[in-house]
Length: 114
Image (cartoon, rainbow, N blue to C red; front, side):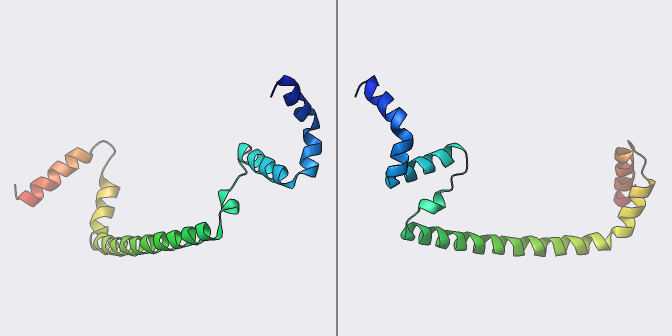
């Protein structure tokens, strides 16, 4: 193939796209991929799609299980927070900016009985 052949096909490319369905499909797929519009799901076989569905179902179950665990942990922490909410509120309201270490030191002294 020399440069004349390439130039010939380049000039005739629109006509080839109109007359060759396979070339047109490949061209459109490559063009959309280049333009970031490409989604490979449209070009997967039936078996590949089934594998993808089963994989996504499994991932969904794992994520649902993880979410249940996180929700339970949030409930647990919320109940702990409710128990200490008045203490948190008082410390938050009465502690001036920059005095956190001093307040912590005093609280440690109180709890250690000093």
